[in-house]
Image 1 (spheres, rainbow, N blue to C red):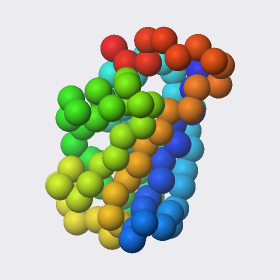
Image 2 (cartoon, one colour):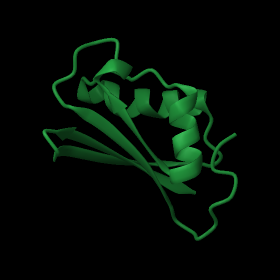
Image 3 (cartoon, rainbow, N blue to C red):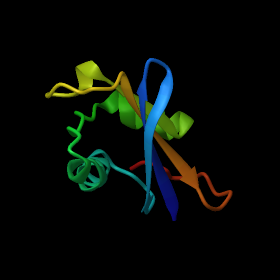
Image 4 (cartoon, rainbow, N blue to C red):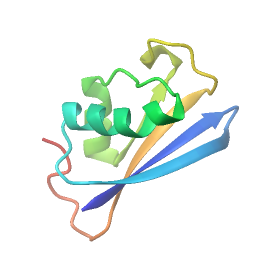
Length: 95
């Protein structure tokens, strides 16, 4: 079990955060489903998930979505997604 911590950042300041529980490993489709569930009720566009984002999550447990990663306009500079693992087991984070 792990937590997905999502931060909206505008001009290098955190303007909003949200958190949800996730199960590991995380695939691109699973990450898209989770982001849809969390962001749509907040009226935030869901970003396009690229292999670069999955690779960053796998290697650094964190990735950032910039304005170019969204199909719609956004009011913040970037959206950061970070995986916080409850236990010290950090194997098999991504499929």
